[in-house]
Image (cartoon, rainbow, N blue to C red; front, side):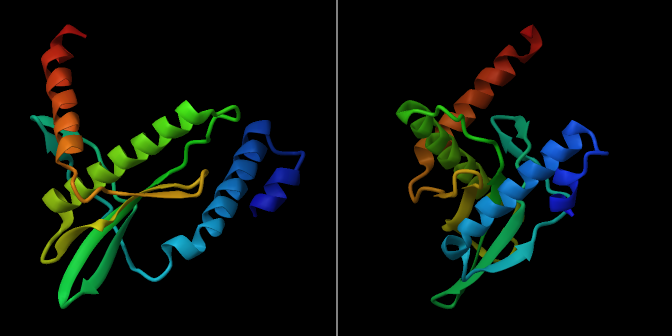
Length: 166
């Protein structure tokens, strides 16, 4: 269907471009197949509660839940798919920033799973991912995420303090 849309001159430029970018995303995701294989993927709830950080509701939406049994313990994680295109002239600094953002996003996933979606399973940082589809990278929540979580909470405190002034 997307291939047909790309070549259909009767469609708008927007629709044709959207179809081409969708095909690019599917191709990028397909190249990651080996990196994300071997897990038990479950549909994420359609409605997910917000994650609350320093009294600020933060919208974190797990695109998929990830289950596994590890040493007799049912574990859970989740993934979000980041679809933003990289800058074509992306240098070392931009690449590093993109990876840092991926680690922060994976940390948010871990916090969200832990607070809102774990149920009777044990949250596992190894199963909390931010997948940068366009760059073909899977960012895993760090084992020690306390500093990142503190940074996120501090940012929310700042937002809450400044909100009435904006």
